[in-house]
Image (cartoon, rainbow, N blue to C red):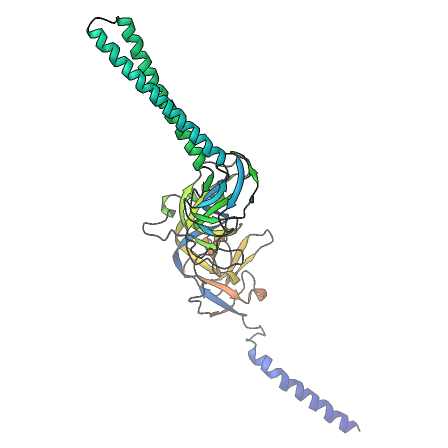
Length: 393
């Protein structure tokens, strides 16, 4: 029995030694474990166009509210709600009978004034002839001339009254002041309307093209400007603006900046920027919320750091682990401007040619020796600048 126990003990010891051999083979002389392996990416410098992602609202490029300019009852509505209308198209008709009577009365008044003017003109001519023969006095001639001139003025006043009457008659047909899409009708046949009433009869909006009003804080604009002429967009740079819709998709047409309000809102501290964009399919509607990625500066020699290689320290500052030439880890504090695709745009803290750790961060620390493994990071940036705004640092 004792011999059997000794045999089993020896067999167990041999098995333990056999299992420990791979571990012992991996250990360096002196019993130290090899440096941990990490994945690194070698950084490259590049010129980057910086963008700002700004919230905005779509507005119509032109908008007109239909209001009657004369009083009366609506006799007819001549449009379909939500349809496209052309400029000058008739939309409503107001009962014209009283205005037709006004035109007839003005025409009669003009005829009467014309007849009186003709009579005064003939009287003035007769008095002038008598004056030439020294039969009529100078005072009589002056009175005749004054009567003639007064009659001519009365004719012009009657003509003006006739013109006003005809304008009022024309206004009984309400036409479209602009071309565009007309909204819901706010008055029906038989409704009594008054001149310049508060409530519009309908609203016409031109939605191709549309405008987009975005807001940017004055502080951000000052920050961009303080970067100086060196950060200005170069000549020929793409200055078009990409729009992101509420569902996250990119709108197929790009916008262009047309104007900026030279005024800072005292309440919100923002400046309004206006853009214009084509809308042939009517996808953009007035009041719709969008995000505009607006190019604002050009940074030369910036570093695009993979986002998986950037973490935050206890104070919330962005940091990265860099492997130096001796394969020793160094911690770097970064100055991040904004994101671009799946990378951070770094202005300070990293230089071209350095190796940033992108995998294995959980098992290393500053001052440790590591075994770096290079990752091919070419083409990992996803598209143009995402424009999420500067990161807090």
